[in-house]
Amino acid sequence: MTDFWQGILEAFWLVASGDAGLFEIVLRSLQVTLSAVVIASLIGLPFGAWLSVNRFRYRRTAIALLNALMGLPPVVVGLFVYIMLSRSGPFGVLDLLYTPTAMIIAQVIIITPLIASIAHQAIRDLWAEYHDLLISLNTTKWQRMRTLIWDSRRSLLTATLAGFGRAIGEVGAIMIVGGNIDHATRVLTTAIALETGKGDFAMALGLGFILIALAIAVNMAIHSISQTERTSTW
Amino acid sequence: MVNSILPLTLKDAIVKKRGKVIVGPVTTKIGVKGFTIVIGPNGSGKTSLLRLMHGMERPREGMVTWQCSDAEAKTRQTFVFQAPIVMRRSVVDNIAYPLLVKGIPKAKALQEATRSAQAIGLGNALHLEANYLSGGERQKLAIARALITEPDVLFLDEPTTNLDGGAMKEIEDVLQSAFKSGTRIVMATHDFGQARRLATDVLFLYRGKLHETGAAKTFFKLPKSFEAQAFLRGDIVE
View 1: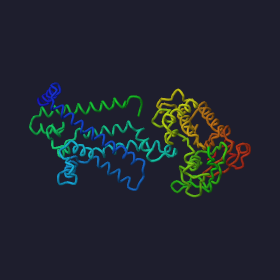
View 2: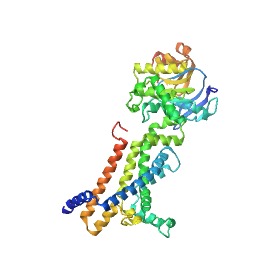
View 3: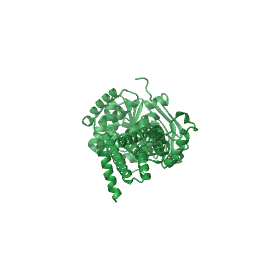
């Protein structure tokens, strides 16, 4: 238990002393994860809507596959991105390995299926509700998708936040493609892994508490901006 | 307004679901003017017939033809469902939605929707989320939304079921005034008094088949078919 209390104390001191190193990795965590969430949402939300309003032959297979991809092991994704971006890989020439960009790419691959799958479920339910109306009004596929995304935005927020949750706490993939380089690609999770390895449990725990606080703060901020659970059931 | 998309002609049209004939074969014509009431007991196929006319059900056999291309006809008719579909938006946004679909600029669409909401008696609920409306108000919203594009034909599927007398009267008044301003109305109901109040002509549907069609006056005075007579008397026809 001493480690535990020391962790809290450490976290407090790190924040109170305005540690520049801490500030840097917190900022990088946020930058990488938020970029990944924005990109994954831009892909995943329309894809979820598209899956809801289109009927095609292998739709059920596609949905089953998408749901399976939600459990994609991050380490494997990291390895895959590593191979793609390494000097000898097809995108080696872009020189992206061990950069925050590489970390964003890996996280986008990990959370896009998650966001798309949750979005698909929410939008499918709304589509069942709106189906007759939107067909009757002679809307185009594109208009249907836009309407459904907009009107289910509160539920889609959940999808986005789930993506954020998975990305901010993710360590396997970004460790491989980012390399945990100080002042370059070190983020909260990789720093925790490093401190744990070094045996500095208090520091690791302190960073851990800051990570959790950060996740809670971002969720709260997004909820209050988007006014969920405020006015009505949706 | 360009040429009318009416008359609508149904020729031996059949709707099937899971191999069972729900409606048909139906052969009839919806003329250029009028307030047609499709009447019949529950399960007689009123909804399916309306959906067939509206193009939401495809005829398994037979033909449904407008006086113009189907694509054009689709843009000039609207449908009000038995259970009003309320979008997760404010009242005014709900009513404006069909205009936005047609590509009308947002400011103009909202302006027209506001006028329409006021006309139908939803003026003091403009920015309320539509989910908060009562049953009667929801149906008024659906009707306002269906009328905002000034369709040639308005289909209504039992719009006043589950509404009390006051709400029913309000909705009937709205429909009457739409009819007077030139909208062709085709409405399903099993409420006999309502049919009598509104209809100019009647399609009597029983077990998926049209048993009788004609002007409302003659139908109500002297129905020809046995089933219609029984239905008119108030007997329970199954």
